[in-house]
Amino acid sequence: MDFADYLACDATALAQHVARGDVSAPELLDLALAQHGRVHGSVNAVIRLMEPQARSQIAAGLSAGPFGGVPFLIKDCVQDYAGVPTSYASRSMAGIVPTRHAHVVERYLKSGLVIFGKTNLPEFAIRGVTDPELFGRTNNPWDLTRTPGGSSGGAAAAVASGIVPMAAGNDGGGSLRIPAACCGLFALRPSRGRVSSGPDIGEVWFGASTEGVLTRSVRDAAMALDVLQGAEPGDPFVIAPPSEPYVQAMQRSPGRLRIGFTAVSPIGTEVHPEAVLAVQRAAKLLESLGHHVEEAAPQIDGAALAQSYLHMYFGQIPATVARLKALGGRPGDLELMNRILVTLGSSVSAGKLTSELNRWNAFSRSLAAFHAQYDFLLTPTLASPPITHGTGDPSGFEKSLFGFLHGTGLMAVLARLGLLDSTVQKIAIDNLRFVPFTQLSNLTGTPSMSVPLHWTSEGLPLGVQFVGAFGSEDRLLQLARQLEEVQPWFGRLPKIVLHQIHNPKQL
Figure 1 (cartoon, rainbow, N blue to C red):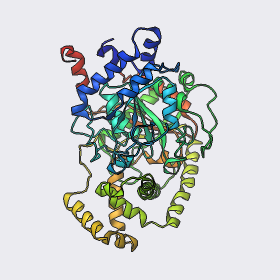
Figure 2 (figure 1 turned 90 degrees about the vertical axis):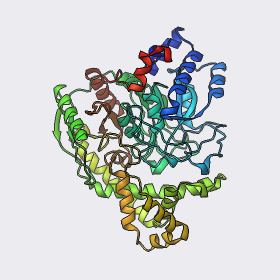
Figure 3 (figure 1 turned 180 degrees about the vertical axis):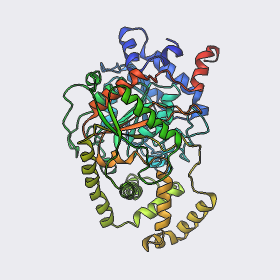
């Protein structure tokens, strides 16, 4: 098998080739490592290679799971691999080494996936771009001047650049769907409780975050969910298991669906014409398939939802710092903006945070009322095409001012007095301006997916999002499979990959 053959297969097909003896697991690993070597200097998706662990795994005998022999990458947060640092892309945690695998890693290994590295992310996975100071920024394979999204940006870039057909990520505010939309990939965010976050974490971000994968095919996502789904002892959320494997349910017709759509930002910010066009074209495609489609949205105060999300979001950094202290980390090594978030988050009272968390139930009930009339909500995944690096970042003056206020202790005083509320609001809007549609699914615990149906006039991918009712992963996958069949995207690849296929002497 050469690289062109490798690229022509999804993870399911590669595993079938291994099972038939057409290719071996070591040969597939060599292909993945070779492609990593070719694109690493320009893309920077993989920040830690684990080739010895991968070779040892193969030598010990592959599991008889559905992905036997397929090269795979995990994200450098939450997905602990025993004996390998989990840094969260932060210097403060670079030396912290877990002693046992996370449940999701165990399940990936049991499925036969060969884990040979970890992918890049923003520090502590709290941004929609991937630009940590520790590892450097990851570039979008479709346009190296643009972000691959975040926080699973390294995973998305690795798949889009042909290193692997599928990679692990997680999603606490859009961190699977955002990079999928930026990189022309498919991603499904499962319902709360569908996948365990244990054993060292009970619930990530109060249950807003869950584990999943970024793929080039729907069937890989369905098979991966079959591998991942199911509670472990002690999990805080237990959801009813599917009535049949997702990889089988996916093949059924979704029937005639009722779909409401909107391209209006829930926080009142601008939506790029290409994002609007993406939704309009998706709506017409759905109508052509016989579905009932009309403009409609849940009766939810988007600004209130964003506020609730951001209170949780700001509170994560102080909590993370407390955890890393206990593990022997170095809080002083945090990036400046995250040190500032520690101060801002610490100024929020427990009562205020609890009040905001209590509002999640109201959002869930409003969304459930919407789903009583519509099977799915269709929106843009992003409010604009993938942004160029640095867009929306604080200016040099703002960073200097923040650094001064933080260094002198004035920021903590001003925050406690409520005199930084406008600053907090600006940070909030800057963080959500380009990704205002994804947090709804996280706070309500519902499944959602980004489907790569649109490419802009500049040739950039721009996915659309579907949000389903709680526990409706099977129906989302059925719709995704239908869309994949009538408007396939698997063969759409960035020039950085196509160039290598058409110039084999350079491989």
